[in-house]
Image (cartoon, rainbow, N blue to C red; front, side, top):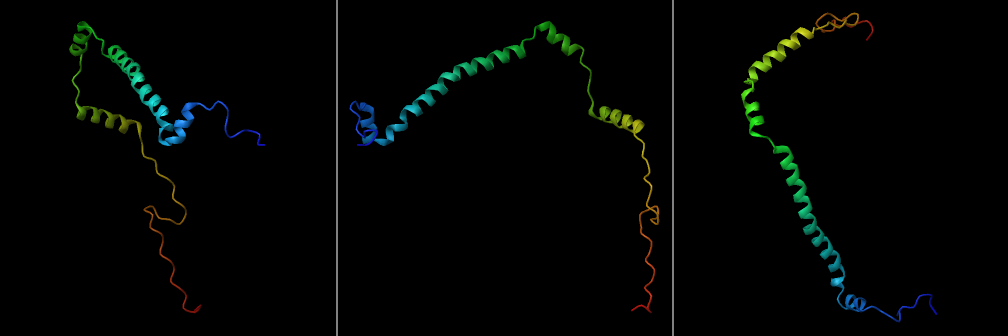
Length: 118
C-alpha cells in the first residue's frame, strides 16, 4: 500500500473541474493579477496627483516675483565667459622628449646599412 493514497476520501470539487478542463487552472491567478492592477491604479494615480500639486503650488505673488527678477540669458555670452575663465586657469606644459628624439617627434634617420656585413 502506498504512503499517500492517490484518491483522497474528500476530494474537492474544483480538482475534478481542473482535471476535466486543465486550461482553467490559471484563471484564478490571472483574475487576481488583473484585479490588483485595477485596484492599485487608484492608489498610484492619487500619489501622482498629490506630487503634482506639491510641485506646481505657487501663489500669484511668487509667480510675479520670479518673472520680474529674471535675468536675460544669452548662450553666446555664457560661452565666452566660460572660455575666458578656462584660458586664465589653464597653461600648456611641455613634456620632456626622450633622448635622441627631436623636438617635433620625427625619429632620426637610421644609419645606412653596412654593405660588408651582408
